[in-house]
Length: 266
Ligand SMILES: Cc1ncc(COP(=O)(O)O)c(C=O)c1O
Image 1 (cartoon, rainbow, N blue to C red):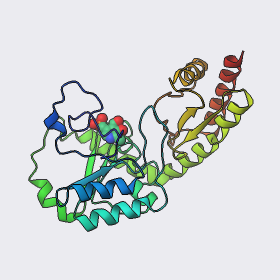
Image 2 (image 1 turned 180 degrees about the horizontal axis):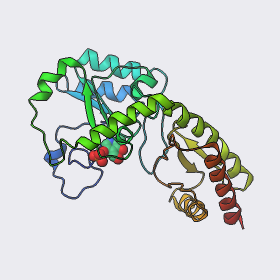
Image 3 (image 1 turned 90 degrees about the vertical axis):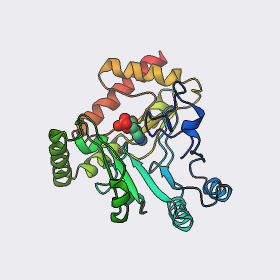
């Protein structure tokens, strides 16, 4: 897995330390985002021993800017996994259906073996899905898995309806356009009012960083000022554009940001 990536709260990947023993991580090795040389070195050091590579479609850690894949990165990762016989597993829990309704791998142009979706697919209902190539179905069916709400029919109905509406309304296009409208706004305002900043990541899932803000207090102050005025700017996590956002909403948020920056300057 990639250093600094959040894949969930299970012991093998949790960013916390409590309740985790060394054995939980005994079979996990890590490399840095966009460093195909490091991944290649892991395959060399653990020859024939790496079952799979799990990654998010672009790097979206918390408390740090988002990083898009460098040109050729995904082609190289995919080729390496095929060459070494390792499964390429994509954690599309956060970005899934926000860049492409077919999954973020479609947006970036590569083919994983297994993809995990959650969040957007139920539009707020608790549902997740692990999907993959036909050839892995038999092995997957031997893994015991169940839970109290395993067959929650309402969530499945919600997910089916969500797909239908997202396709009908081109929700992905709306989120991209609204994100693009937000686009340069924060950086232009930041320059104007003496708090340089920029959005990172794709327009539909932006992440804001401020210059000279090592301890992240400046962004917390900005987020608090904006929130006080009625828009929510998360200081340490991606923001999510939604198909319900309108141009007026985006413009209103930029207005709140401008007022917040004026207040900070004074
Ligand atoms: C990229 C990513 N992977 C995995 C998870 C974990 O999903 P869940 O909280 O449904 O276990 C999250 C949750 O925030 C996430 O953002």
